[in-house]
Length: 188
Image 1 (cartoon, rainbow, N blue to C red):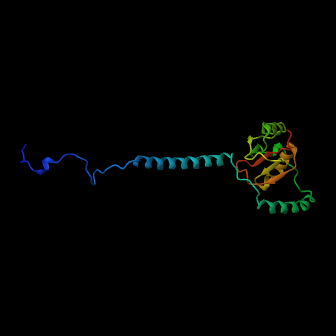
Image 2: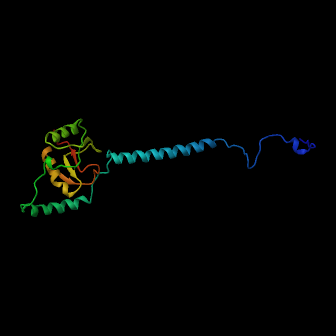
Image 3: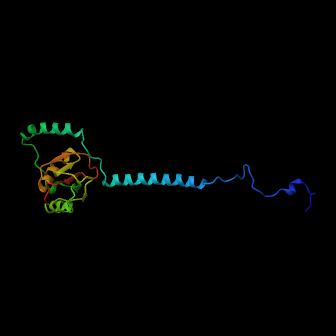
């Protein structure tokens, strides 16, 4: 190896370099990245919990539904003309349930009410898919909700078995074809 003569670049020390390769680190720079990562994680977890709650049916958007009022009044006005004809189907029984899913929900603060309702329907021959607590606990009267018009007779049969006459078409319970919401009037 050849030895070069000594020049001014041989006296450079490796002090703090400033430039494109290395700069002075700002204080707290790591905390900013950590805060953004924590915020993103929190948002993603929150969205995931909301989606899972909606898919499980443990959370429902219920309230006064303006679109159901006109259809209820129109079906009520159409009912007398249909009941006059002998072709009106009677309430369906447990043998007509087929693959229709049935859920029993406790709409009150009374513990074990959904289990009592499930036992009543199972004794009557109905197949209950699941039971649990409703999203709200202030329900005064028991109502049987059904998704499609073709399930109305089945919902009426379930209502008769549970001891109520209140039957409504509603999309408030998307995880079941027929949902029974037990109210304070249900004694079991």
